[in-house]
Length: 119
Length: 106
Image (cartoon, rainbow over all chains, first blue to last red; front, side):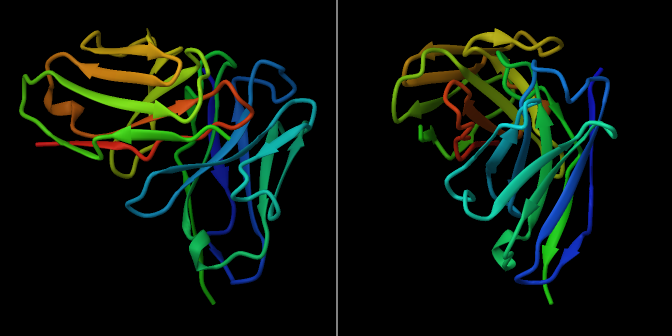
């Protein structure tokens, strides 16, 4: 059973970089079978897909984030990470990491990490 | 990028009702569509993938249909546990955009 867990600061100052890590168990991030993804959700709002990283290190981001986002893999820790720079209050949200088999969408999700952007 | 539009945004129903919600895409992408259920404060749960394949463990009252640009999720007889928000998502293109959701309320 694949399990995901988000970790990182719950409070980030405006203009700084939001950094979150997703620790994966039950699967290897070296596997080509998955897209390792980040999704966020503003309070009382819908799901917003941010982007994904493959085992090759290739990434694809939503155009809404393209200029501010990066993702990386840490194969030694079996983790993948999200960096979102130049944050504003509009980036305050619940951030999920998720993955799934390529033909399925996302059948594995973390519990989510609430990040507040405030001075 | 493919845009996903769900309707209605809110659906009022009663226990035992048959409910149907729709997801429309801005361009055709075959049947690479997933449906998720989300309850407040929880991560979404995959219900259906490839437009009509039920994820393991999901009750058979849930069903999905459609291909191309129009898809539906049907709950054959609404149960108390089904009051939640439902999202569609396409996963054919590089993008993995979600629809804006349909909230099923009493």
